[in-house]
Length: 604
Ligand code: N01
Image: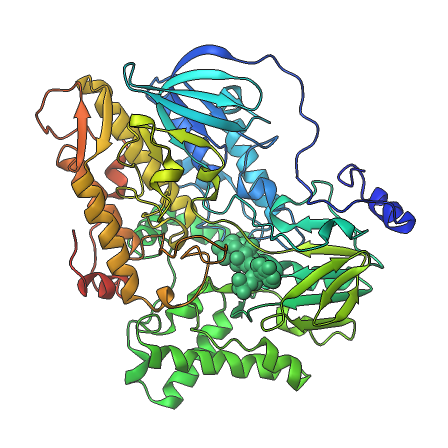
């Protein structure tokens, strides 16, 4: 039974109680097409999210032949798959968009401060059409294997549609949060209702009206979807393992006047964003919380709470570095939860006891308020985990919670999960999965020793998820475009980092992370949300501008830390075609907290 076709089918199926629960994939039936065999390309890009689309645009601009293979039926990546109710961005729309085209910036109008998923997907489709990208994207096709041919210095790429193409460059634009985590709950196959994952939501939507719904998880996806599911469901039971920190979004419509004013100096806004540790701009208070009086702090936190969103963490400069400072913002946020949630026992359960902002901070609209609704129940599974699914629900601590449908908001195998799904074989038959068994290793998060001519966009070891993703993507793609262009200019056949430079970078990424309180808890940043994964802080937390400066220096030095084969030995500086706009002077004061972290450990 396929509930994706029609939400009504779901209601009927539940009524007749004759279904086998499965995790729903978001794709429709794939159209037939002949396999592509023997095609020789300059580049294959995996994934048609924002990274894959922009990479294709730049490659074509340089005259390279390229194909993008995309598992989904359309562009948009994260925004193609995550169609759960309430999905929206937590970076302001005016900044969560491409900056490479001034015309695009000026002509596109966002409707809300934080854009909802359908609007972001619409934007992705607009970009695909505007830059005529679709003719080089192959949809509904999953890359299954990629093998480096050491003699020909190219990659052989295979797909689940029987395609076998070769390309000099393999560029992984697979996203950081694209491989859903589906915990193996005992008895799940016995459950008679449907089970959804937020990251693979049915395209037609799901109507929960009148149903008893269970949600597993309380991360960002749950925090966004719970208030909306609660409006439809006859009852909602939330299974919480770890209480979450969440700040109100105070989302609002953007007026024509606001848009006009913001666009009047859009390039300046973009430039300010690039100079920030997060790659997006918001007012920042550099003063340490511990130097303020309790009254000053309360006022500062109240003002930051009233502005809402991720910038709440910018209330003071030391919040993610000093535990005592963090305790002050945590106490403030706990008091807010207690003030919102009427039932004291539920409020206590919703109060996190870990470092504020250690896991990715959630941004919500009415999350805590939802627990005041009489049909919403919170079940603590921190000490007594979900035992099993039964035919009629979920059992915890001997109690059966009777449910018609379950939503797994259980997150992703972050950063490396999408790499794991593809058998990538480099030099000497080494697979990437084997090389990364003890944790990912990549120079600048861009390339990995043993895998020549393979590039990653926002890979582990780059700022990626700790920066505004589209800015991080654009910076990587521009750098890669200049790198690949340079290789053609000098006749290089392959590029690969040196083991020494890769080791130094991995060590640096690790060192910087230990300065931040973010490394102290279990989260998807460190991979420990998935049982059996090694604990490694994967994104680079030293700050976006610090990272960009390092990338620029590597390029100016003729690709320092890389070995280029087939080219003259000279480390001549390459012709800069696209990276110029990333040469932002670092204002050490403005980028403080990240600079603080960076200054306390040796920079490579
Ligand atoms: O996933 P998560 P997410 N039994 O990993 C729980 C981005 N994003 O999809 O914390 C019971 O954060 C797990 O519990 P615990 C954003 O970067 C952005 O919500 O491991 N519970 C946790 O509560 C975000 O951080 C936006 O103890 C289980 C939850 O499931 C990232 O994506 C919106 C369990 C998973 O939370 C991931 O967010 C959405 C089990 N067996 C997502 N297994 C915006 O832009 C897992 N859990 C706003």
